[in-house]
Length: 455
Image (cartoon, rainbow, N blue to C red; front, top):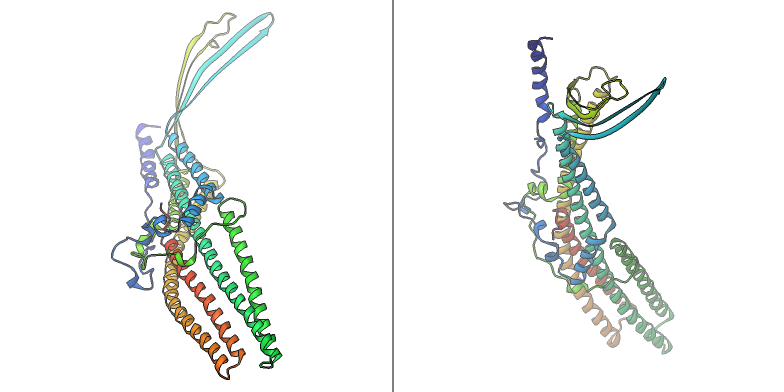
């Protein structure tokens, strides 16, 4: 083959191979525009509540200790960190693939034939180096780097979810504590009511129906107390598991002591592309799939390998006393795949399909992020309104219960009206505690949805 013919064969291959060196670029059809339903919720820059360190948002010292313990000991987070270590090792291996491989070997042979003994030996080193003309090593390295970034984002995603879950469980305990205190206080009130009703029945001022109704109301509250105590125990057990420690009592404050900012910035929707760790992870996985496709495409091009051997041997002759000499060899090889029963084509189609799957996953992750922000904003707004209404309702029912008690004492009002007023007040106080928790839960959900969780 003439030099001109070789060049005419190699140049098209080199030009075709340049395509595998292209870098990943975000698909133009995937944008964060119009993710937020309420355009007034976004400000003119990318600053969001996600930039607030979690210690500044959750100021309860008991909760801060729990979150710090979880970040150090949680099992899922520990596994995620190990995956980062694996990805770092893979990237290191991909980077070292550019270097020549080197091996050292020695062998000896002793042969006896017709009274003659021949001794031979070989001591040498072999080196091989793949010339990355068509980008196979480059795409593998870039893919490994994208995978490492995806794993780092996964760690942050687990961290964000862990902080939100610990905080949510903690505030659930505070809500249950308040509801339990309300129920126990009401149980004491109902006990007094039953004794009063029994005294009135003995005096002929009321009937047995009223007494039975009062007893039934008291037993309802007793059952509610037991259910709340069980819920508290189960929540403590669940939180202990998150903290990777045996089930135990959780030290905590009270719901009324909690304070949060009056407003949290959501920023522009585009901020989700950089703040949400699961969105970043999905995009890095798309980049890794892009490079995997490029690598599969590079497999169609030739592989060029340079190799050489240097050593000391005495196997060059056949005498009984054969002196050793240096042995040097050099070899260059070009291997072009021709027919592999469709293996390379199948691998390319598989890589292309996985790349499209990763693109769809990335797009959906961004849409899910926008939905979660919208849901959290709605929850926050409605929780504020519901809390205002529940505060007014409790005040109204407290006054109603007081006046009904006075009416029964000084007029014809029945004790059943008093019982009804007290029952309504109990339900309103329990609902108010729930609404206080809902507002805090909305803040936690918005913080997580925006990608919060930094130190």
